[in-house]
Length: 318
Ligand code: FAD
Image: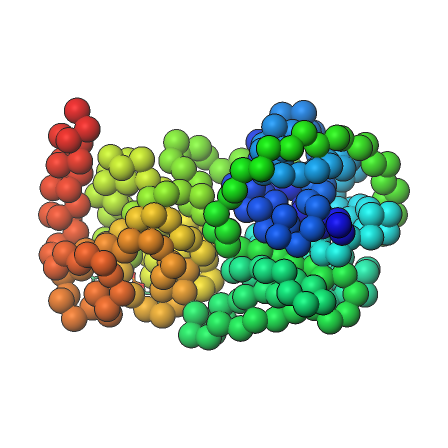
């Protein structure tokens, strides 16, 4: 069986859910080999085994994390030369996409970004992408070199496989050219205590209809143990940080429950949330386009509806 490389997305050894999704997809295509860059491989090992990594290639050289993405692309190039994978899967985040693009040039290979599904096909993986703000779905495959695919969060439901992967330390040689941009400082985003937006089972999002007051959104989210999202109108108004924007130019989410409050339902917003399992909208305009999409709709002022809902949820929990 051919090897499929999966670049592990982690924070100090805590493996992100997207990696479990990539490993699940990799098992459809061949034997998943996880590439772990940085410190914390032993902490990550149980999660990587749980989702079926047959082997973990570990790279702990400080040069890989002291500089921007270029050394990571070089490392993957050197691993690919040794392992000769049939595909390389990387998370579709800003860093993942830049690594993938650099790697595609180095390996003279085709690159597909933002896949929302990947299946085994004749002659290589077949990807599905949602394009033009979700108006079209296209299927594509790489026809030259090693397929390099970046995969969006929630493209697969993680399926446990329970393996005991062996760990192989890999010595990488980083060129001077890859060390031209060094990280001088990094600040973690302030902890909110809420789940990560792309991994949350429940998301409560606010739009222009909040009028800038995200208090009712956050309170309702906290009563449900949910993440908070925002429309671009809210982000552009400076009411909520861009990291929480849902949509075409924000994050793509697919939670069990998505609550859109004071959001009209523009196509660019839908592009980031329309695959949510259950969608609820609170909007004071009964003609708002979001109501075409929802499973449950509440016509009303979010500043009244959400506090009532929060109170009810809190009451039922106690
Ligand atoms: P509005 O469209 O102004 O809607 C506000 C809604 O709140 C209205 O329906 C109104 O009835 C309701 N409302 C007002 N007051 C209340 C109240 N008190 N209680 C309840 N309801 C109330 N948008 C995104 O969200 N994400 C993206 O990633 C994104 N990317 C874009 C990319 C491009 C290239 C472009 C051109 C646009 C993009 N947009 C994106 C912007 C998008 O087109 C919309 O402008 C935006 O989604 C509107 O945000 P909104 O629904 O919060 O605001």
